[in-house]
Length: 208
Image (cartoon, rainbow, N blue to C red; front, side, top):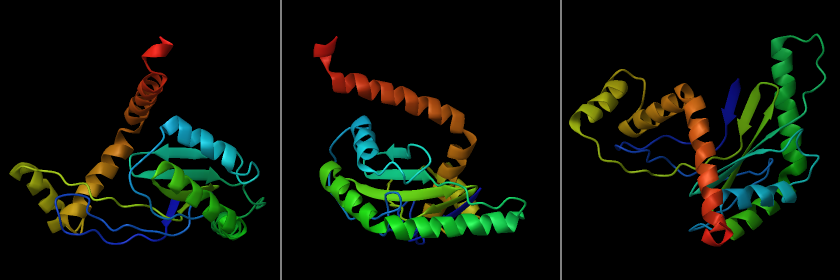
């Protein structure tokens, strides 16, 4: 899969993911602003966007990810007509379809993102996928400080010295990405279990 990203920047040199904060277009594909604090559970956020986003933007319900700081919306666009075309032609057609969709939905996306950021107090980011091309329009990089002992710091320094990462911060983010890729099935089951816990918590003891 080809993944492109707009609005990202280099990581700072720290023993945490002290990267920059990007702002631009989001929400299928629209935009965003900023918000402080948080409000609303993951199910509420997903339900709100399911009702708010036009049904003809994507081929299916968009994938909506929620954490404490950010709401990420990833929608799938219909594949362009490229029967018999080469891989390069299909990839170029997918990129063109993404660009056209962004231009056509930008204004409404900005409006929806601003409403959501005000309501849920989280940054809204967005991406679209077409065929095997995924483009991130915005992404939020949040500083996450951590304490590491010398053996753990040496792992990060080795990655930096070998040219795999530019800094300790970049090396730590690389390790997190690698873990996510190699433990995707396990993490998916863990997230599903956490969603069930959240649903029970939101229902409260009175529903038992």
